[in-house]
Image (cartoon, rainbow, N blue to C red):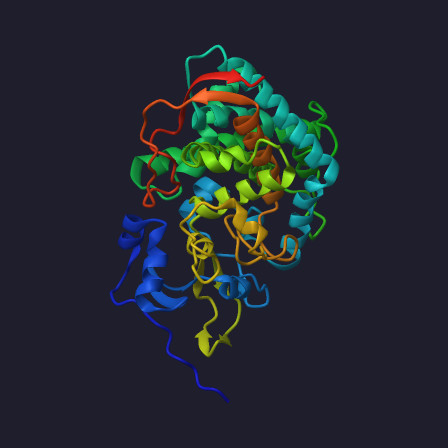
Length: 419
């Protein structure tokens, strides 16, 4: 019988402050310092095992070894995720809930989403031609909120748009903040769940009739593994788990604009409008730029892996950003190079900007397909269907701020439709 190895460990009582100071780089810096993809530390007052890399991602998404219950920090549930949503479930409960999400991702629904996205971009392009200057990040938020509600079957009044946009952005901009900013995110979560919950109540009473197959319809009548109808609050959490991630694509659209500006030679390659070229560019944006920093789970039962001992209940986090930038997995990982995907294969565990593993059995984000398709439509419009000037601005972005967004939020000037 092989002996247990001692897991590399960070010295010190707690490294939460360091993680907040270093953001996306914290786990990667410590992994380099310890020369190990597996190490132990203390965060938020408890022992934590940190993982990075493709092999480690495959371990993390093994549902026989890890569970999600009790893993997500309370402050993340209070803002980003909501409580008792699909991300917090395991086993049969998770599979039943995940199937509801996957039912929204069929070919017809995705094609409808793409057509709706194009319609929203046409609307924006007409507006932008009348404006001298536009903020890509803010404009994308509004565009995506309209798209998300249209596709999900959520009625959205014109007079509500600004208020709902500001609230839903709080959900993904505040999970890693403290004090008043975090309180604003928590309050926004409560307001959004109350809004969607009220709509679900109307659906169940028959006063509001969404199209079948939309998120509003599916979750209004979804039943859990015990055959019970979801509470209005939990159903609202799951509808928001469709709407909120779509609006969060605004971060990727800002970085898409950043990549087009910083890499004009790559932008020229998109002129053919070929699906493969658009796909590779989008995947490289997702790989290179920061988005989700990591995900959390807890050890289900005691086990050994690579001679390291994992004890039941131990909080374990997987480094998304570090894995996407791992030089053992990617050639020149800090270089923006969409053509790498012609030579380097994508697996469920090496490209994990939104998580890894299998879509049904594991916790891989069901909305990843949505992200890809919306980003491709957006990229095609920005690269091939319009021209614009780029005024002087600060296009730098921080790896400390979570989420990270270009400092100027990407300003475009004199936008015109391309002939």
